[in-house]
Figure 1: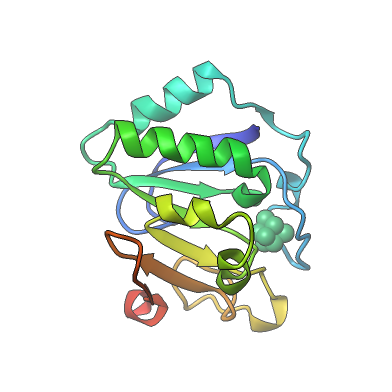
Figure 2: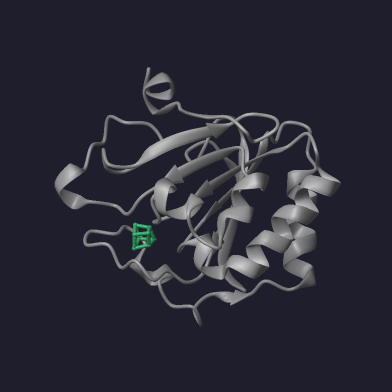
Length: 166
Ligand code: SF4
């Protein structure tokens, strides 16, 4: 897996002060995407042990609520992101995980990539649609995108988009 940057503290990509990992590579190529430089899977730099150490060190700070995976589309780097999420949940059980993806939630739960969702606390789903752009909604760019919250045992989830917008 390659990545572009690690940003923290970040308050624009999820609730609370967060660390955001910007994963390289995206297959969606949405018209009007704000980060087209992140589409290339060979872009950025390797996510090596030093990068992981930096990520974990930032994540360990008390005021950091959790980690956000963005990009790019982290789901397109599925195996590496899944392994990293598992490690984070083991090492930092009190930190939450937000995942941004261009895939729709309903497609994801029916795909062979569904396991990733069991490590995710909040999912922001869907491609960016220029025709539905809305700068008034929280943590997403267009109205077709939703924020889903997963509850402790992951047997329940809720669309909390409107709740968070208020
Ligand atoms: S999914 Fe996100 S990163 Fe990928 S093209 Fe769409 S808006 Fe850009």
